[in-house]
Length: 81
Image (cartoon, rainbow, N blue to C red; front, side):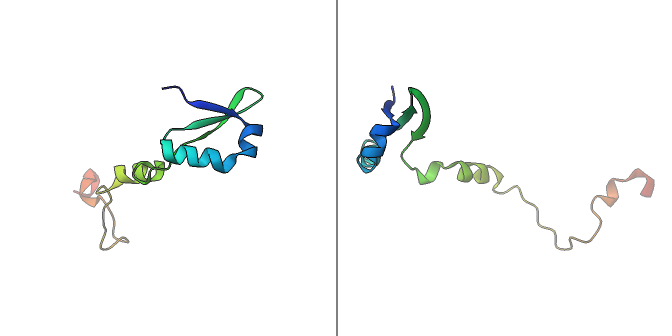
């Protein structure tokens, strides 16, 4: 699948039209400046945001300490045995 590329001057003149196109087609477009790609506009997917993905990987991995001021790992020190 090749992404549609649009010059920034063309995008500036028809920004809302291009945003609607991305929304309806669910395909990204790339905006270029002097032929060089500078911005990609992609449809928003609430289930697939970077923040959600990063936080999802951490779910269920956090520990809860009832007394956070108590020493941790005291039983692991051989010198204290």
